[in-house]
Amino acid sequence: MMLNGVDPIATALGGLAAPAPAGLTDKVFTGWLAAPSRLGEVFVAFTDHGVQFVRSAESVHGDADAFAEAYRGRFGRPLRPAGRAPAGLLPALRGRPAAGLQLDLRGLSDFECDVLSATRRIPAGQTRPYGWIAREAGRPHAVRAVGSVLARNPVPLLVPCHRVVRSDGRLGDYMFGPAHKEELLRAEDVNLDEVAAFAQQGVHYLGSGSTGVVCFPTCHNARRITPAHRHGFRTIGSAVAAGYRPCRHCRPGVEAMPA
DNA sequence: CCCGTGACACTCC
DNA sequence: TGGAGTGCCACGG
Image 1 (cartoon, protein in one colour):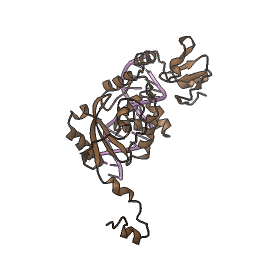
Image 2 (spheres, protein in one colour):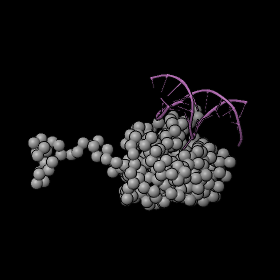
Image 3 (cartoon, rainbow, N blue to C red):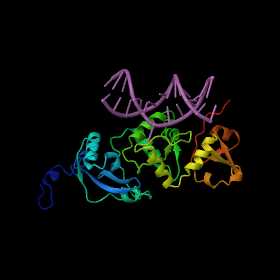
């Protein structure tokens, strides 16, 4: 009870009660809204900590109640409609740089957070293999677990799990279906036909004969290598053995060198 | 180079 | 609880 702007209880406690306990404001409610995205309409749930859950309308058969049910099943709380989108959400859903977009990833394991944060560092228009995520997340052998985490990505599009592909050049699976993964990557100007053509020849890395740097084929540095100076490699190890150094931008892994 | 197979780290029922 | 099951990967033929 506040009297003339003074809280007698807080006063009695000598101000110890000043900041509300962290858990309290969390329990207020989670808002949701529908918004346009590169996958058509999406449903988005968010708290005051940031965006928590995103699903395409298509994936829940256009049914907002099904979205709310999926949310409740996973987070244990109901949703209620929200009027305004959090800062940065709408541009991010359209694939533009998301200035100030906050994500609410509370409740996820350290491993899940590390996987999502590594995934978030993949620039638009580029791809990285699952093994790269595992290494960047500090668990180089947890490759399959990376797949398990991304299959349940709470915030697809915002954490661009569609940019994570198989190391053999194939796209791999996607929570909304491989066709949508391909569609998203093409919209970002990833040259999938070129990647597939290289993969068919067993080429998964590109080196520049003039700079001596070796990259993933979708790295922006790799795309600037003139064809005359371009050398394809099947493994990063063979490129290193040939005197190339891994690109500091796309950071292809350095595998064990043969003895 | 294409296929099958084993191993893998992690999560969930 | 532990044993499935997993958006993969490397290797062997």
